[in-house]
Amino acid sequence: MPHDDLAAAAELLRAADDVTLLAHVNPDADALGSALALGMALRRRGAASRVSFAWPDEIPETLRGLDQEGLVVPAGELPAVPRLLVALDTGSLTRLGPLGERVRATIAAGGSVLVVDHHASNTRFGTHHLIDDRAEATAVLVLRLLDEIPVALDAPIARCLYAGLMMDTSQFRRARPATHHMAARLIEAGVDAEAVARELADCHPFAWFRMLAAVLDRARLEPDAAGGLGLVHTVVRLSDMDGVGLEEVESVVDLLRTTKEAEVAAVLKETAPGRWSGSLRAVAKVDVCAAATRLGGGGHRLAAGFTAEGEADEILAALRAALAQPVMI
Image 1 (cartoon, rainbow, N blue to C red):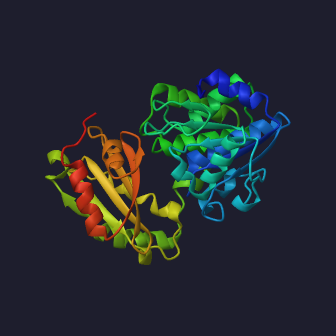
Image 2: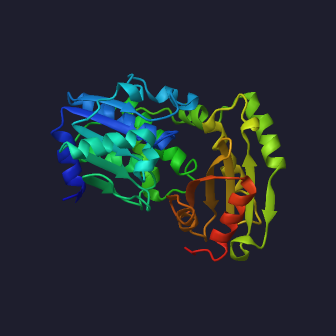
């Protein structure tokens, strides 16, 4: 029977001597930072640990500084049937890409799969779960685990957790008092907050500016969409991405969401010819997770996503329909 309990998750990790940790495809700071922090903590306890993700083949450039101890290994080097597998910041098996097969294989062999996540749309695909959609980031849940095991914070672990917390709260724009208390604790453990912020959010290649100019010129405002609350959207095509990493493209939606006249912002990113990844953001009123779910995706109430195939205009039409009668927060 699946367990959904902090104590049970901590006991599972406490007893482990070999752990494989997975982040979702195209990992962000919360997914990779959470996996690395937990992996390093388990190594401190003497367990063998490794971190991986299905794609891309390398760590995104802006996140490379998080793997200070070389835990990340290529997906092809993972055990075929891990004894204990931990999936972090991953709402469903599909978000693991081909590595979802490792989950099935582990469960079929009688092993354990722990899912640690803060997405409301999580499908609970493991044998054990630590899921809290009220948590600002998966990094918050990992810190709870470290306290429960317990494992002391040190600077490398704290840096990875801080990265996830900072980026998943839009650099603390969506933060509660407890968020800042956690950030303070991580800084006290040795995090250089200014250096992390510059590395992850304030340093772009010049090609990013060219991409941004083209994409923002393509932006359109629809004041009557989203139940009259307004929708602003744009499209990032493959031809816009020369010299720009995917993590740089992810920043577009947070710029677009500053549009005063729109409650909802949407960015369609072309990942292959005819294949798209959509990012949705809301200011405060619309549950964009509900809209993303209608399109086969998921996420959080104010930040969600989906994937789709077809022409951009067709996908935008489907998005308008999903937002026509928005679920309100």
